[in-house]
Structure formats: structure tokens, C-alpha cells
Length: 129
Image 1: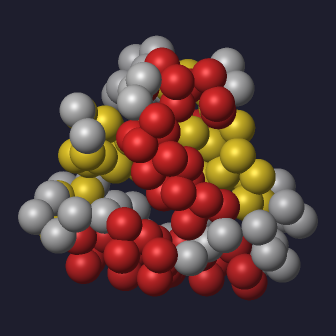
Image 2: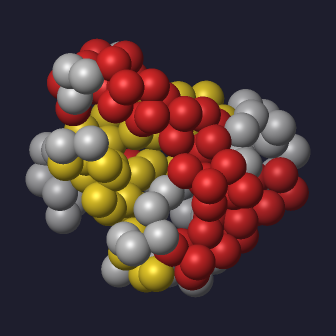
């Protein structure tokens, strides 16, 4: 399934599609500042407060940059682990080929959680979440 198809499956409202595309763009551009501005302060992401989650994304983005990546390509796949066949977004380093996959839980008008998918990700050399 292509990323656009998955986004359309998650929500039919254009404003929600735009929001989700903007969040995905922040991941692709490895822009943790943008993520910080987009995500809700009152939510927990990967069982962490938003501040900790954003700091973790900064570490992950720095890892990609050290590998020579300047952009993360977007695709999708199915989780074969704990989310058992749920679709995930896969970000792949444009130079390293390293993969970082996330599951985005989208309810009504908001992203309510973001989970790391280890089954569809490469080893990032970082401590686990």
C-alpha cells in the first residue's frame, strides 16, 4: 500500500489528511522542531511525555545524519510483530538505506499515539524506547 492510500484509509477529512501529511513530512525532513509544534502537549507518544518523545526523535534523526542521510524516503509496510498486521509508515535513509518505522494511531481529528515498530526497522544503534 502506498503512503497516500494509507493516509486516506486513516481519515477522510482533508484537514486531517493535511495534518498527517505535515507530521510525516517532519519525519522525512528529520525536523524535530516541526514535530514539537505539530504534536499535542497532552498526549503520550510511545508511552513517553511529548518532550521525551521529541528528544528521542532528535537522537534518531542525529543517527541518520551521522550515516550521511539528508532525507528519509516514505513508504509503508505491515507490522509482523506486536501490532500484528497493522500498517506502518517506513522512513528509509536516502543514503544509508537504514529503516525507521512507526505506527500512527489517529482517532477522529488527532494523532493520539505514535509507536516505534522494531520489526520493520533497522537496528539504529540506540537504546530501545
